Length: 193
Image 1: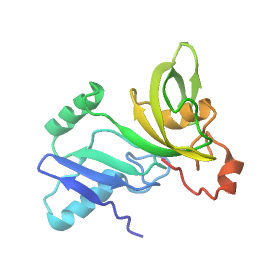
Image 2: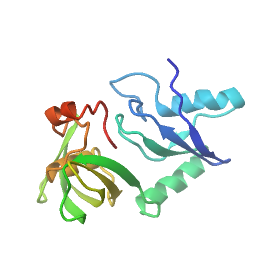
Image 3: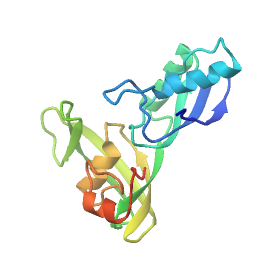
Image 4: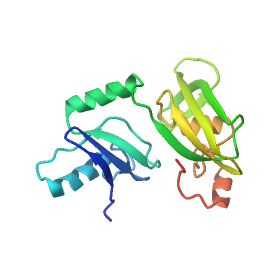
């Protein structure tokens, strides 16, 4: 089955595409073709000389959303610098279990990564190996399942998923950090991010 990855913007330096859920940005244990490989194949249909686009940031495998890739090493460096210096802002929309209070908040904690298990854990205080994480949320629509806008002030592995679960509002469809029984009840078959 061919996975279609719609390109929503393209110029001589940059490519913005929709990353489907279930596609990895980089080669991993899940196998399969990566997002840059899939986009490269699409680009070669129009231009056989097209080079594989370069990642400038990542989205988790189960996350669907817009991703920016570069067509040149210089463009990649400029975009990565923009992300690192927080000149480019990442915003996400997600659905969580319950409605967080207050309706707008900036969460500031620490994240510990367990690379062997492929998981992270949020802790309230600094400790060896923990990195600061800052996640801002705004409730867009409340209820049993609320829709939020998330703005990342740091960009760590599984940050949104782990941080929202830590405050008691896991993402709908997240069996790793969330509530498997609630996800099943709501028929959430994929991560709502």
